[in-house]
Image (tube, rainbow, N blue to C red):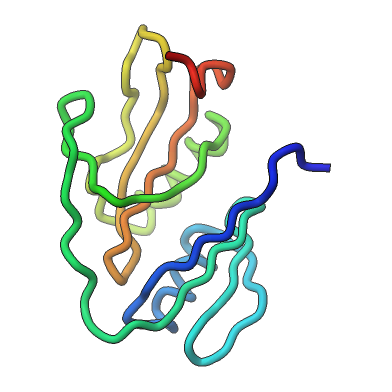
Length: 140
């Protein structure tokens, strides 16, 4: 049994079909229930639901972290290093445009991690990361 309870996150998209393909085929999420206006996905064991919302997303603000402008808001998953490498290679092959290309953040410091940021077709910012030492996930 998974010791972590799955979260539920519902996000707005302006093109359900386009985002459905993105989350299923680019990110690799298993699709669940759906309608013309929403789709459930298994997002690494969590429930992600895309909901149709007419119009464009508001432009995200940013916060400077490690000398890079991180989009706010964003969401994602902490992966293993192997999963991170596999996903980052896949995204590069699919010509996904990165907001912040894959790199190692806080190298040699507490909380060293691989990270990358990109957007889905509706402009929702995602971050995927992997820690050198997962025990440092919540280190201060």
